[in-house]
Image (cartoon, rainbow, N blue to C red; front, side, top):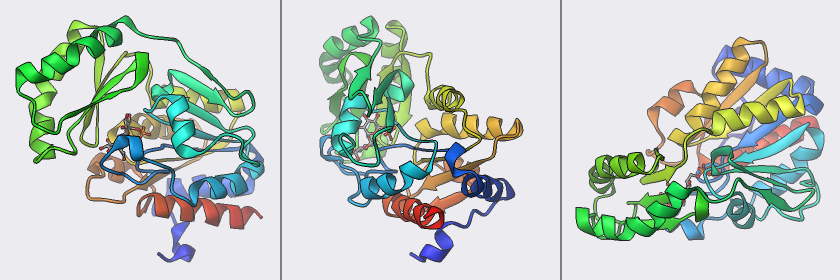
Length: 282
Ligand SMILES: O=P(O)(O)OC[C@H]1O[C@H](O[C@H]2O[C@H](CO)[C@@H](O)[C@H](O)[C@H]2O)[C@H](O)[C@@H](O)[C@@H]1O
């Protein structure tokens, strides 16, 4: 990867976003998704870990910025553990917005704020194993228990992840409806979670809180489209932003690539962007 090229957005809006970040870093926010962006995609979600260069790069960059945030579908505490984000010099003010923004972990308190269990999720957690048996889900379909705020059904480890995923869409959507939940689709995963928050809502609220005058957001999956849309809305209102697609595999949704200003080859490329920014601001 040519690091000289890594900070070259291909759109005028992206160039403007980068220029604003570099001109006024102390008012800029860098916000990043976790899986597929800071952490390479692996077959077993419990084995996902941040790229070895991610935390050092974030720790170099964060002191120069208004804030650094991780915005993830993971429970906040899980992202903190898998990311290795706690107790890192330089990341004393890191924020992790988990469960698509329903939860929040602040490095300076070390605590997670959560709305607690949702009754629909509690019911689905109990019902799901029998439900998947009854509908004849593909062998290898795996339930990720994400606590009281979401439950995810993964097909990556089945013989045909695409077919297994498509076969689950309808039945899981019916199940979600019955319990007042929504289905959040991702890379070979369908999550059942309460509606009302998404990464766009979470990111916009956080940028307002910090008083950001520019933002860089990086993501790799459908769940990141809401954050991309929020940044595009902000741009329309005069706040510059740079949208980075982490495209490490052919799985990256076309909609995300189409809406990005800069495409990098997965977490390795994201780390290169962070390092290049830290170098430019040093
Ligand atoms: O918002 P994110 O941080 O991107 O989290 C979204 C979901 O990511 C995880 O699943 C994805 O990563 C797994 C590990 O690499 C991979 O096996 C799976 O196929 C991907 O969809 C996670 O397991 C979910 O809970 C997250 O919500």
